[in-house]
Amino acid sequence: MSMSPQPVRCLIALSCALLSTAGAARAELALPPAPTDADYREVNRAAAELGQLLFYDPILSGNREVSCGTCHHPRFGTGDGLSLPLGDGGRGLGPDRVADPENPPEQRVPRNAQGLFNLGAHEFTVLFHDGRIEVDPARPGGLRTPLDTDMVTGFDSLLSAQSMFPVLSPDEMAGHYAENEIAAAVRMGRLTGPGGGWDLIARRVAEIPAYAEAFAAVYDDIDTPEQIDFADVSNAIASFIEFEWRSDTAPFDLWRRGEAELSPEAEAGARIFYGWSGCSECHAGTFQTDHGFHATGEVQIGPGKARRFEDHARDPGRFGVTGHAEDLYAFRTPSLRNVALTAPYGHAGAFADLEAYVAAHSGTTRAFDSYEVARAVLPDLPVDDLRILASTEDRAAVEAARVDMRPLSGEELRLILAFLHSLTDPVSVTGRLGVPESVPSGLAVPK
Ligand code: HEC
Ligand code: HEC
Picture 1: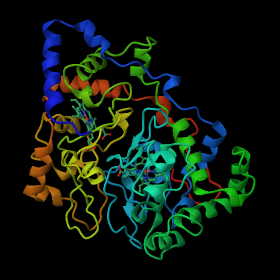
Picture 2 (picture 1 turned 120 degrees about the vertical axis):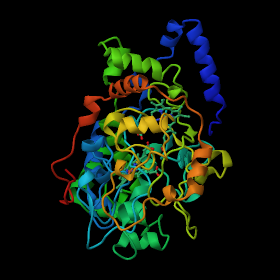
Picture 3 (picture 1 turned 120 degrees about the horizontal axis):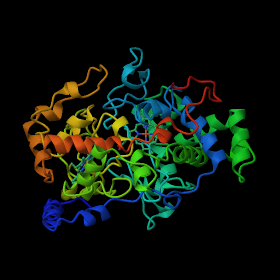
Picture 4 (picture 1 turned 90 degrees about the vertical axis):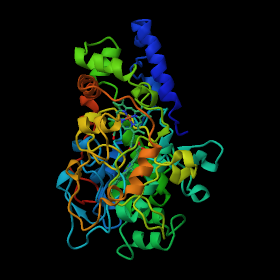
């Protein structure tokens, strides 16, 4: 799926044609419509309310300290405000998160925590920066994941299946070695079946009476706590994410529906974005994504994604999933909904500043040459975050894979930023249910 430089060149040729025929009306046609109800799955409100509690409850993590909300918090645009998360072994929230001196993380989580907006829209059929889980009707269970046939079934959606991964990742939620029963199961490779990692988590939840009652009330096929399995937990969490962070009332949407004016700067920026700039070649349509993979020469910091027994700090992106050379350093095109609030940016979160990011991303500035680590948000940890930047060979490989983009003038950049800000939707940013005061386990909620 990775794109060769070809389409961008075609696009520039096309936009030249548009300009020469003064095609303002045709440019208008390229602007996407606002989302409608038909774009989204229906959500069961009671399941979403149960999912809200589970999402913010550290009971799902091995050491009972990390919840989904630790890395996906509404205060930080459903991310964590860090370049690269600190999962198990961290303390505090957002940019204030630090390594716990008693049990410091072994390394940072290698990729930036993604925002969770609009994941209940039908068109999101590929998840993670490298798309390693995706809808695939040809496979048992209808999903392609790194676990394939070991995958448990019973998920309502791809989004639901996604929760299976952070909870068993030692660095994110499970913890290490024999610290707790979940980490121990993961270490022995016991994931599925009774006594496997997912079952142990479901048992923890089912033992709490308030959860057992809520599951029985929400799901017709659950009467007793023994019937609650991890797929039920993750189905509820998925309902919450879909309900809570649907984002379709940004100023840009109101304007597209004819309900409000857009500032002249944002409107001009939208026309550049969806017009000759080429941005919408990849950031296509209503949600600003083609759901494809592209190598955009991103600055990479952090530990990377070396496989076991490999010694390097590279993150090869989509290549790690497909093994196809054309997918080297290609990452999934992110949706840009609420992007003004989801800093830091890029799969490694190398830039905390949106303008500096877009300038580097579009090739307006030379990403690697002008990079300073002060642009990132990295709590202290005794690790080397700059191995890729220090390696001439690795940098050259990332830059060589990069597709061409047309650099922007200062004025164009300013207008595009005004457009990006018009994608900030106050309703989805606060969330509809919000952060609960407390959760049934009685553990601390990330506030
Ligand atoms: C330690 C931080 C951390 C925790 C805890 C965490 N996540 Fe994430 N989340 C991430 C990171 C990092 C990614 C991107 C991973 C990648 O692409 O390789 C991600 C990606 C996702 C995505 C994919 C979004 C997309 O557009 O592809 C979803 C959905 C998600 N997380 C939901 C959850 C849920 C639900 C939980 C709790 C069960 C959770 N996360 C716990 C850090 C975290
Ligand atoms: C060739 C495809 C392509 C083009 C053209 C493109 N982008 Fe991107 N964009 C991507 C990909 C892929 C990423 C993710 C990179 C990563 O994960 O490191 C991205 C990331 C971004 C992000 C960061 C989002 C986040 O949450 O981290 C912004 C902002 C952005 N692009 C804006 C733009 C703008 C503005 C333009 C036009 C000037 C543009 N892009 C052109 C593919 C493209």
